[in-house]
Image 1 (cartoon, one colour):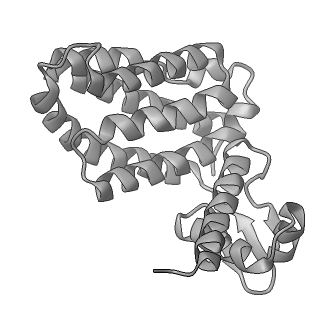
Image 2: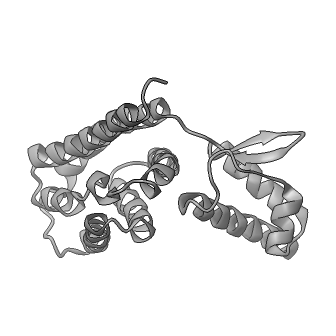
Image 3: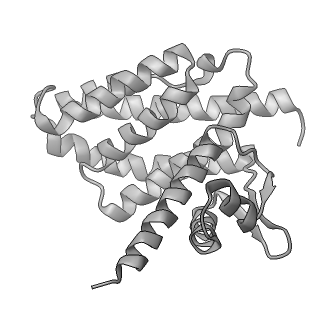
Length: 229
């Protein structure tokens, strides 16, 4: 059985990693922003060891870059990186949701397995329509994590979640600076849950395809807005 000190340190490590990831997702830590272990340890009033471990974890997740001379910095994703995330996500989700519709097609909309997902869908869609990023991101990530978890094994679910976090890290700075961010926020969560509940494979795949097409249209918009790279 591990010593209580090790448990406490691992818990603190996860708490720091979660807090820093939230800072990045909220846009308070900007792409390219640099910081050191010492800076973060002082900010949170903790020792350097769990901070260093948390930063290494976030680096492994692709959210930070490590430089042995300068410390760490928030990774800067490009539009092409974002397209790659969407394409990878689409390939996996296509297979996952084809299986999902076969498995849960007979579920009632208010059945226990889907009630939590439906709540996430309603809150995410409402926040997307309002252009409220602060509310949307958390609900959107939980929505997809729970929905994918119906059939995807833990490794696939974790990989998809990581892709979605990275996609949001890319998206947040652009959306914060957009005149009308709500115009570029997908809000089809409820339609997707309805299709899954009804066990309608065509409607499920239409919703997923629409989601991916929406993401790629936004990438094209960013390219046009920024001009030649």
